[in-house]
Amino acid sequence: MAQRIITICGDAVTEMKKFPDASFRLIAADPPYNLSKNYGNNQDNLKFTDYLEFSRSWLKEAKRVLTDDGSIYVFMGMRYISYVYIILEQEFGLYFNSWITWHYTQGTGKTRGYSPRHDDILFFTKHPQNFVFNLDAIRVPQKYYRARNNMQGANPGNVWEFSHVHYCNRDRKQHPTQKPEALFERIILASSDEGDKVLDPFVGSGTSLRVCQQTNRNATGIDINPEYIAMTNERLAEKFSGFDSFDDRVNRNTMQLNLFSCEME
Image 1 (tube, rainbow, N blue to C red):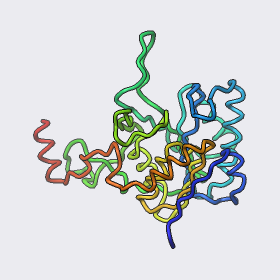
Image 2: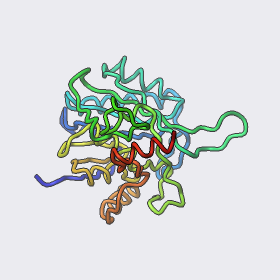
Image 3: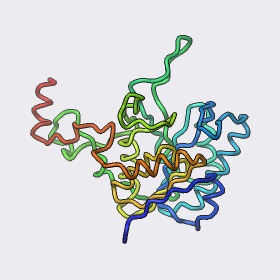
């Protein structure tokens, strides 16, 4: 069956209501954080209660369109993440798996207080046990050689280190919150199989769809801004030369790892 990558310009809630129940095995969502970012034709500066209602409305549809063995990852800023957690677990009955911290090397500078250096990602599933998790697809190099270690690599854990896509990066698009491709690659490889259907309700610059395109997933991306849909379509047509923020250490083999460990010691 031919791969399908679909882009839809429209409101996330309105468009998700058009999908049948249990349509997607994975939802990877990076909604606005309500930090007054400029998204072109819309601003994320809702009142506190209005933002929570917005979150509740799209998460309700996300649960409905998720397959019974599906997973959802939600990027969220620190101010609202605890409220989103409660909505997912207490209101909608999804099952908590992991609270992932994405640590990046550079962030907003502050002189009154501590500069932020991370975003958080909530990982929930629709069933407590029956869900996809392809650990072997996302293993990272063992830090040290030990005979008892799985030399295929280690579980990456729940603290992930990926660089921002900096504004000087040739892969940077005209979008205020572009996420690195390697970050989405880990999510997509771990929680879906080839041929599965993946949904991004806030597709933005198209990172998730680009990763799905290159990892043989079927994907649907929604965005309310037509400029971002055009940006995503252009990105999908570009020549592929590898994901940004890729860590070359994953190519080390066991012998190299042993030597590397001896050098470190």
